[in-house]
Image 1 (spheres, rainbow, N blue to C red):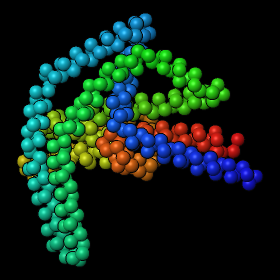
Image 2: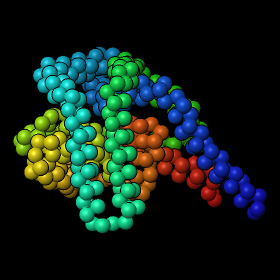
Image 3: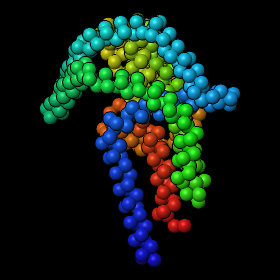
Image 4: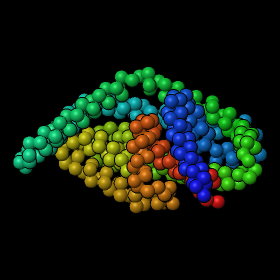
Length: 346
């Protein structure tokens, strides 16, 4: 009995070490993995259309060509119609960034003045003041790095440009790749592993199609709302909200801050209206849009979700925060399977 417990303990330790090593290995080769990740995501998004054409007996190369023609036609339409306006707003928004910092500094100064009038202990007042100064310094450095890191922007554009070419082979050889992977599995374990893979696929589809659609809808509604009430750079701010909303819990706050600050630069009343509107849009998303689009949630506890987002952001930046929830959900599925198969009593 004691030897069985020792083996289970050793198996648990090996399992934990294996998970840590896998995460560390991905972290080391992240820059190499990123183009293939974009390609896999691109192929995953196109899979329903590709599957539909295959059911219609369209040869895979022709099916991919049709999808690409339609997709690039839509992209060209966007570039022709919407991109000039977006670039104009984006350029003006970048020039407006120093003013945003100035507004944030002024808001913080007003807040510190309010704290000092309350007659709190000097330690508390100094702590509040120092925290604000550090935050503003960090914000200034982040904006400066974002504006100056042209190499990073070009590298990301290269990764995105490679995605359609890499995803072509992934879509074309999808069935062959699937057969080869399944052939590597043990016949005894194959049904259970395929079940886990199916559940992971469900979670991914829920995230990719659900979260992306919800974020897109919220971004469009935000841009329309800001345009109606007269906030500048409504299109750019809507895009910021759409991207930020992919981050659970923290995203809506992050996406709302730039809009409120820019509105505050125009007038205090407009900032108040913007803040109220942002809260209303978030309530609309949480109570109407998300339940209609997403249906069943991924099902992670809020503490697990927040921890995953923080770890993902620390290790992999913005992409890590966006992908933290589905990756964590899939890892939990895999760990449960391994634990049930090799660690827990039979």
